[in-house]
Image (cartoon, rainbow, N blue to C red):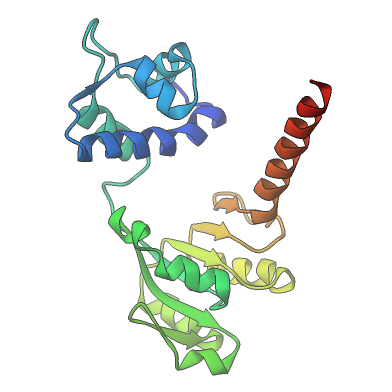
Length: 213
């Protein structure tokens, strides 16, 4: 398999999601054109992406849905269970904890942590919200693959540095700040407002096109 570009990597979850939906519906094969229509991509780009994964379709048949889904799932590491903790039990942290799709894909949330002691006694999807002061001990006693950062921006960098110093290798950051962590740490910064601003741009462009008609 050739080295995958960042653009292809960003498309892999979409391919996996659509292939899973097709598999649930009992679809056995899919063409590059059909998959491209679902993804909003050209058939040639789909073929190029999938060829880079070491998979090839058959003339007149297309791609085996289950086989291609498994190949992409393996690349995404979905054959393993990944354990997570959530730092911050506010609206974003609790929304992540409540979302059932993560568990279906093998992402298991072990606990939430928060500085606000009023939240500590609450229950969230069967998970106890722990005081932040228990974080170090918890990480020593449990294997944690991913730390979800859902604290205020001012606390995000410090929280991320603490968990990575204690052995967590991946950080999923929802705080409105770009984290800078030591080499070898996987970091994804999720800026919710960015996608809303892109939507605002698209609305503005659509309105301009209407005005020009």
